[in-house]
Length: 146
Image 1: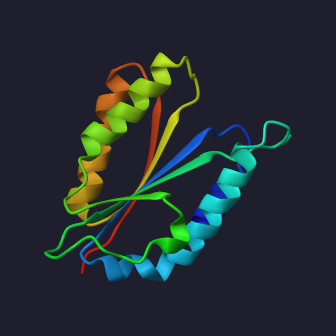
Image 2 (image 1 turned 120 degrees about the vertical axis):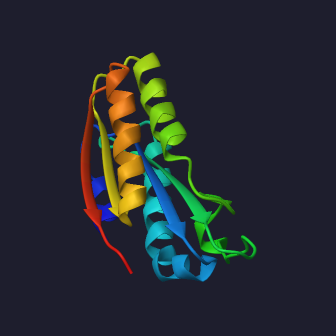
């Protein structure tokens, strides 16, 4: 999975993953990978003597279909936040950018979006909004339609 490679990029402080599915069962295919990444990130980011700390991993799972948010997330050890709604990408992305700017971070915010065109467009708009607030944002996207 691409996420594993990004955990090893030097200098990154945080990785935020917003995963949107119609049903919680769709997340289970990737659950083990996320659990391994979260465990590795937690082990390295909590060790002040580690010469190459990994960035903190934040995973937000949004379930857009009808039903309950009740996946078996026991492997994740509290590393996943679940909501029964669509993600508020503008609020999320500008919040991360504002937090980084307030902390004096000069590194760009990197946004990778993959999904249906309307969702990718919303992520692009949120990235541009954050850019206009003085935070450099780099954007990469892929779209797919079912």
